[in-house]
Length: 570
Image (cartoon, rainbow, N blue to C red; front, top):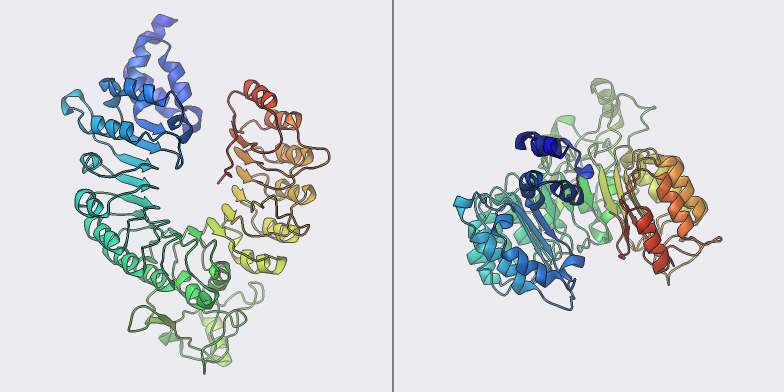
């Protein structure tokens, strides 16, 4: 048998490995196959080392330094690396930046004659990069993805040493880089015209000027993340104006979008006609503006031809009168009836314009008379769309304030059908009736993150008890694959209901679960994992299990990762 395995052609072996699903051939499985014989080891080593990922728990381990010295002496292993990702803990006891920079130098000095190829992806997180001289040689025309996060990067080196080499980058993520400002973003806009995805999350010195330059200079941009930056609603308007017809992902979480900006933000969001993933969490105007923008409306008093001629965004719905105050002298609006009552109506467009200064967008609201509305109702061929965002499959919302049933009904009656991923910010109290309203309208959810409540905040009207959590598998159990219930009262009955209804569940996080009667123990978790055939990750941090019980679970289910970190599944 061993001789037959050794005689298997290299091409056939690689085809067998490549044909397996990604989740069924992790690094451990490939390592086990490589240990069968020398022929398989020689064939599978490039696949094992193609993507080198150094995770935080490994970087902070005592044996990391010895492993690095051994790896630096193995040139044949480094020759196979095409993607490198290093994540060092922010407050690690030992700083291994020098060793990681030595690894970067070894990768940059690989001889081309040995068959080594350039990196296609580079990710560096948590490093103290006092200079970029060792990082710059790795930036070649083949590098498509560059990610630098939580790192001190010299602003001068970033603009003069690194960015001029990034002309072929497709994805750039400079997150939580304290030295990045508008001048650095302008350098990105002029140096990386082929960008399709960009992220400046956590860069507080980035403002509207830099984001407008990105929107104007990168014609292929489809994903923008400006969470935690210093932008205003004017930057969102610029993004919608320049990228609204191709943008698929937008994140503005934690930006200074106040309640007074709700009307302007709604007009900007309505211009994102192709949006698939949206993050408006931790903003005062986030979910109210989204609720307004998602409703297609028919205005009340102007000619039909003037509505669609000067619209910079494409298809922008009018704003409902009950949600936003009308400008002085404007006539009131009348919303479209339900789909059953008015099957032949079609949403008209709003004329939105930006003031001459370019910083304060001003929306003008045309109106149309009731007699004209009845005429257009019979002449327009298509019925009204139930939502302005038919492609929206991923949504992140939430802010300080209680989300009651009426709020959820208003928002998810339009957005619930296409949604696949729903994430609530941890600062958002959610009532059981609101959760029921959401689950009834979002039947196709695959990822659900409920707000994680702090242990010191446990009022009876915000804590989701087991009777409320059992609704989750009964409403969307057939499609659910990822679920986060951090901080809620998860009981053995809840786990039993999830195991029976959620056959495709892959990841579950019950960290910091509240005490229930009877309490959650290792037996309940063992029965749950045994019943869920596809479960891969389960977060059990802070639920009261001792070390002996955790080790017993790990020995019983070696293919399941029991996560002890305080991080929710996303």
